Length: 469
Image 1 (tube, one colour):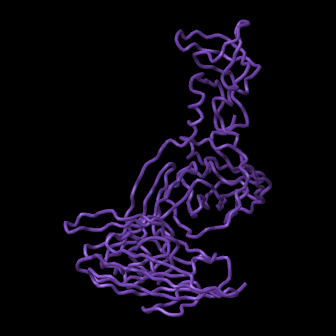
Image 2: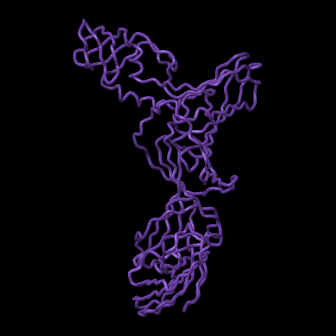
Image 3: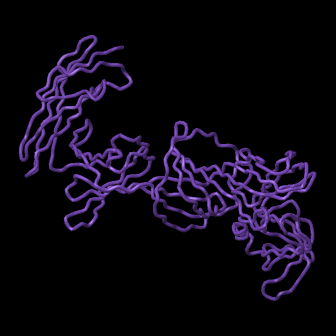
């Protein structure tokens, strides 16, 4: 049998299911030159997959050689495997194989169906010869004409089983023109690796500035670990058709560990229409591990706050920052989750909100959060005044009450022809208003209503909707 599964094989009746997980401890068995570990490079994408690149060396004899690499990622895409000789003897690739018939106690016993094995009783140690009848949904054996179902004990078989491997294995048949050391590059795509960003923004007590920390969280469930790897992350939604999986993944999720790394931050560079984030030092990524790396850290970032009254709800406060270099930022921000805290007068952080942040280019605004206001009230009343064949006219009144004792507010009232479905082409035009306004887009106007503390104001709007269909 391959990978030293030979000789007498002993199989416990009670541990068949658990034995499926034993091979997870053998994932590091790699056939490189003695004393030389492969040089790893791992590029992880947002969508739960990664590109693995390894530089390896192997000693070849003149003529045909078999190069084997076991312990590759359990969730590898075999179609993506690429073998590239770098230097050494010229070698022609004759075959490439991927072996995934993974050894397990159940499979070992299945090869003995219809044959004899030795059953060792758990309690007495008595040994008896039995014939394996079935291993489907339990174990059935025959001894002296009596069928035993799931007998207590373990089995011993006098020989091993060929054509099984203890971990997913790649192999190549190459024809070398001479003896020598070949250095080659192995690359492949694997599922089971992902990354995401988490942002922590802490507002100062006066809510005029704050501190932003960005953390990259990696999760490795591909089946193997990577020691001393060059790490790169790709931000963006990559179009990728998932291939059919030809084999079962035998790695059982059994939990993991959490570790945290400290700066330096990532280098950022464009990659076609995506962005590539490169860690400036090598790191190790263990299987079943969650690792956190700092992406950015900046303090004293100015915060702008505005009050908004949208169409379908109450008044909200919106907090924004600018993604500018002068604020200690100025890099493309990957999508992630933004958590906002506020330091009270005792400098104790209080949690305020959690929102999604989308890919944000440099020099753009970042919406930190929205917060429902309880001391600013707005009530909107809309009436249709006239309808023509190709147009409709509306009057709107918005009563705004500012119940804050010591703060004047500028409220942005948003108005659009919400009565008309967005799929229908229309022309939206404000005819008159008692407050200044601007058009945010072809169907939306924003009105700036100033309301002193403990005061009330009324916004009056007339607008026209002209039908273009």
